[in-house]
Length: 105
Ligand SMILES: [Zn+2]
Image (cartoon, rainbow, N blue to C red; front, side, top):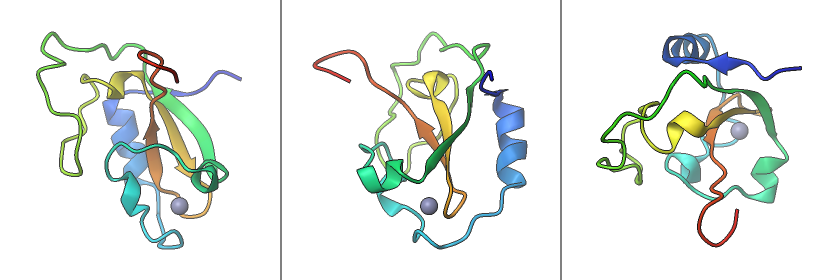
């Protein structure tokens, strides 16, 4: 089965129609980019990926992507290359990015 590709509009619709609960306390460590924990990974289910048609814009690196209050923009690193995962306990949706450059995955 091919993973579902979601563009921005489809992702927003999905999020608007997804009811979350507080079973996991809101996953506060993951309101910014962070390494997954084995505990979190055991709960995550892949629901799709950011559509291949979404490509980085020209000034993509001229943009802060780290930190709790940085905006989510699908045309910026690393969002356009992300899988979309959902927590099976609370239904929170995660952007999942596997960095393959540098020293290791
Ligand atoms: Zn959860």
